[in-house]
Length: 153
Ligand SMILES: [Zn+2]
Image 1 (cartoon, rainbow, N blue to C red):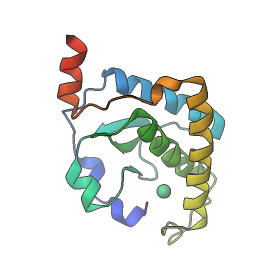
Image 2 (cartoon, rainbow, N blue to C red):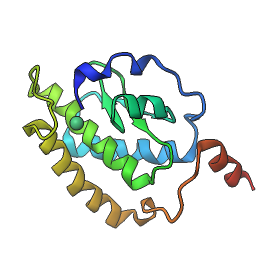
Image 3 (cartoon, protein in one colour):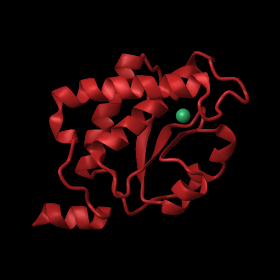
Image 4 (cartoon, rainbow, N blue to C red):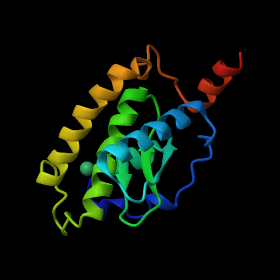
């Protein structure tokens, strides 16, 4: 997604998604696996967000601001496999920034750096999913609070 569209969203807190949530842990484990494949030097953490306004306003499910310590990932009503695909896509951008591959104006829809991120994310989510088939969830929590209360039953 476009850097110019990212303004502001990193500043928001999403207290509804606790960092010790089991899905957050699984997604961050995936990010570590992906970071090794992509040879990312400074791996950002993944911040899961239920901010529908942000997702709709900037029409994205993920984002990374160069130099930031985290990736933003929309988490509402999404299957683990989809969130992980988003995370991999953003990690490709992290690596592209590390390699200085992204110049201003390079991030339009369908641009070479976006296609690269989509292709690699599509490839590696299949490889990860084969080894970790439970990322294809049979049901998706309506929201994080419901998910947590289900877990406590
Ligand atoms: Zn992108």
